[in-house]
Image 1 (cartoon, helix red, strand yellow):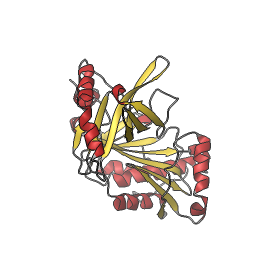
Image 2 (cartoon, helix red, strand yellow):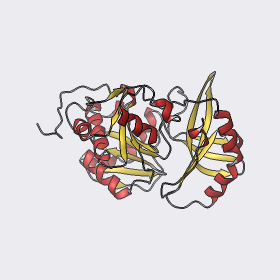
Image 3 (cartoon, helix red, strand yellow):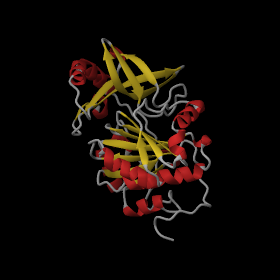
Image 4 (cartoon, helix red, strand yellow):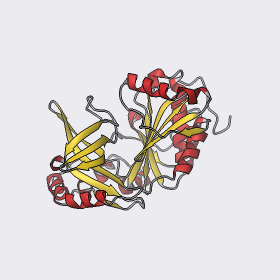
Length: 316
């Protein structure tokens, strides 16, 4: 059996599955290169669709999205949607795959996140990473073979790991995290995609690890808000703009990052970047109108990978 051959009989626990790739370079991926990796990972050509991005909501929204590109899927092609750094791919066999490039560190306090890691190379990669790419699956309950869809995402992640910018990777739901090594890439292509040599067992969920300087950092972010507004007004192709907001459900609060789509006076039209860990009433891709005075932080990343803001990311 070759390194890239898979075994059909293996079973996977695919609920909430995603793979996170830690990168040390925030330059947006070249569309053509990423499309080539996607096509190789899914074994079909992709047709770009110029329409509203796919919904990231409940099961019915996923079914409706699949129906909207049914004619393309019937021809054996995949459909590719793009929206401000988020690629959404619909393929005949794997449902909806989301590839999201986020130009801020995965962990708010990367140094604290490395505390339980005893691999010096891995700790260095996590502490110094600048952003991350998350590959996940939506609508596993509406595809014919969820395990096969999961294998395809593993192969997609393996293809993305060929980039020198990817320094480490993690499967949060399996508490796996490791340095990007050829041996792990081979496993992602192969029959045991989660048997990673030299991996660490660490809670790799994206959590805000706030410190005593967090309030001061938030005050600094708000004091420099005019810089964000000016940059947004003069934005160029490839620029990305995000804000952090504390979102409540009852007594539970989670700090979440939102893409900024528009600024209208003191209000921001925003879209949630990533799935929350604790909250259940909001999903990745959901839109929310936010008052500028409520933000906890902001980040502006240029098309060249230069980052401004991020006051809470270096707090302490």
